[in-house]
Amino acid sequence: MRKTFLLMSMLLFIGMAAQAQRGGGQRGQRMSPEEAAKTQAETFQEKFGLSDDQYKKTYDVLLATGKARNEKLQEMRASGDRAGMRDVITKFQEENDKKLKAIFNEKQWASYEEYKKEIAAQRGGRRGGGN
Image 1 (cartoon, helix red, strand yellow):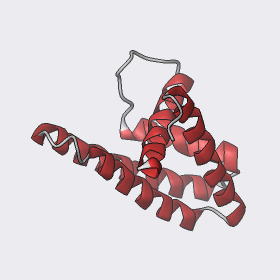
Image 2: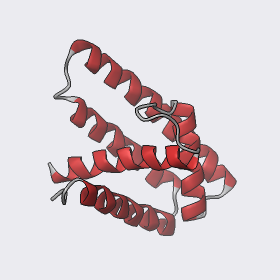
Image 3: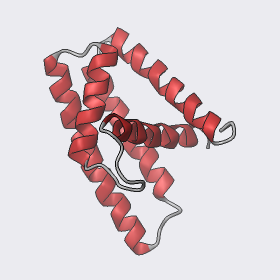
């Protein structure tokens, strides 16, 4: 449960951070999968020192996952199955991580893991602790 909450929080934070970097926008307005993938890949390239090839592969993974996740979540919202949405988000994040681990080198992966912990801690603090 805690891991799921942390992963969801991280995804939400990344989206919010990306929106803030773009100059805001109206509350509730979602970025397209293309925008989100580009922003995340750029952040990862800057923070973890990805090569241009790694950036492209990371963008492709993030884009494919983002599109598939959004489609699945939209289906679930339409059917009223909101209870399973957290599990879907967690599943997609785990798939994302497996693919990113294959792209990143050991140092980049360690930095990514630390980054996820920092994001989760920041989000947890806003939500009243998150433990």
